[in-house]
Length: 213
Length: 115
Image (cartoon, rainbow over the protein chains, first blue to last red):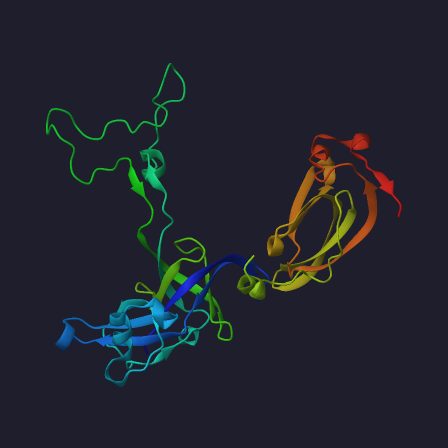
């Protein structure tokens, strides 16, 4: 069975388990998604399942996007987001509907989102540099990055060295989160712990890649 | 807040009455001890009520043996609370009674409020 969903992060709260212990939950409104295309190794060079999420007015899509959803007798509603999930064997057909019921409570999932953008940030916030001493006659060195590399040899900074720069707004995967809630009626799924991105951000949910078997 | 979140959040425990700072309360907490459950009482003064939707809490301070203060914070939604009994209300002039922490004995008393 193919397991994957596209959804929207709603926010965090806490619920209680049977023992009465509070567990932190991120609530995601996910699906219903439609299988818009199946990628096959023979034709596409890899295998994957393309899902579509969120129905919109037809005029919100370009003619090309609409044509993709209406091709070969496929009659899907206009969908705003299309995302691919890499799978070994796509066990679904184009046009199939995928809902939160593919996941059950207790399962482990990975949630992929785009982290909150933080703009241009210094080394202290971005990479947890320690900054300079706060006292002993220091001026303007409190959050300075210090030395980035060696001196005359090699005479340059190696590529990929950590330093100030743009932070966030990146694809981030939260791995191995436990599913603690599935509400088919409201299309909600709850996972234990936090999930990348702002409230309302688009997230992809897939089966956890690195599970204990 | 989002209605979808509200729909899945736990409801407040019906056995907890509205609490005010300064209330003398007895909180009956279910605890698991050696595999079986029993009720433990925690008696003290409500120092603060923190309102935050399903994450609302109240803090109770009691003086344990040797005059050592013990504070516990409980969730209003917690299913582990059997019941809360309000024994008396106090006349207080602020929402957070943290000043009681630095007081002992007579000066840590609160005037009872009758209503």
